[in-house]
Length: 191
Image 1 (cartoon, rainbow, N blue to C red):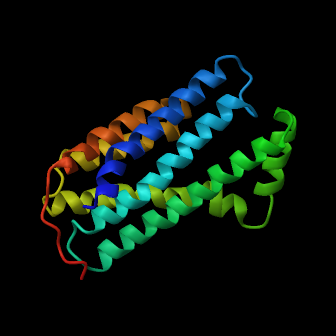
Image 2: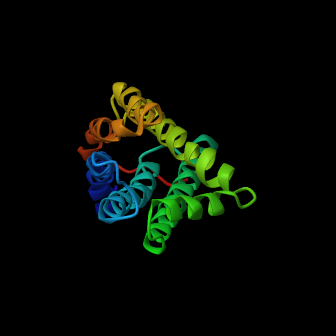
Image 3: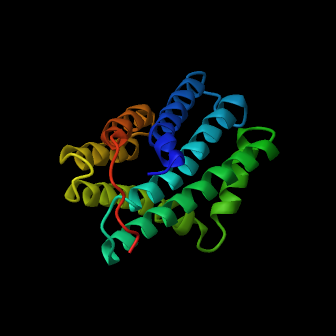
């Protein structure tokens, strides 16, 4: 794996933990968004998703070639793209909005555009969460991750879907699941 992928291995989950912690703390006063806490949380989330890109591309080099690998990596990257758009739009809207009501109005305006709700909010991000677990399964089958890593990763990606306040724990589980990749591995051909 490249140096960028190795840094992202820790950085991506840590950014997701940061997103969850800042979001949770920001919501304690019941005045979350727009504002510093909203922006900081969303910048951390955006950084996390962006850091997953070199990580996924690095994982790709550790897996045997084939249609399954390319499909899993491709789906994961498509999902990441939708997450990046979602968080990027949230950041821009929060910069523009003067209060929560205007922020909600901007969010409804954007998500009301044809196809946006499904592509960016409902279905698109699922490609990342399903894809990253599938990539971890492939890595475990190839002996690059222990058998338990995909299970821990699955729990990590499911927790925030139960309650977004569980995002810090989800990020921590992502980190634990992926940490075994810190060991040096021989790269396989991109074939």
